[in-house]
Image (tube, rainbow, N blue to C red; front, top):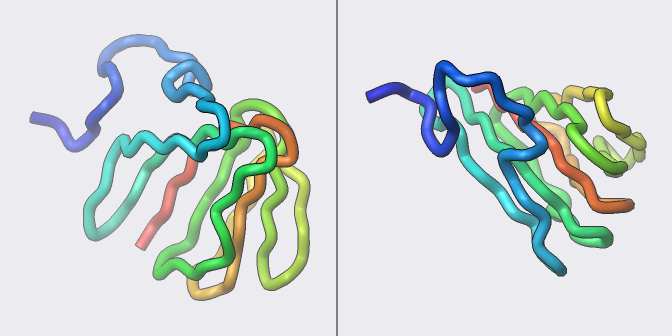
Length: 109
């Protein structure tokens, strides 16, 4: 059994098609998680958010669809499809769906 889960292997995929929007919700799909790395797909409905928190690892975010607002240390950054940002470990950050917004999150511990 592989380390990856909830995703096909040895197959060409479009990541944004691997997680679906749901009205009024933040949907997540964990693809891998262990003591070294966490890989998760997210779909935020417009206006939904993950409130301010901190992580023990550096969190690399890539926007797969829509527009999201990433807040790091109180500074807002707008993320569009194809753009990425790193939320550094132990810094307060939050994620908000300005529009419907899908992202890939890779946290390295």
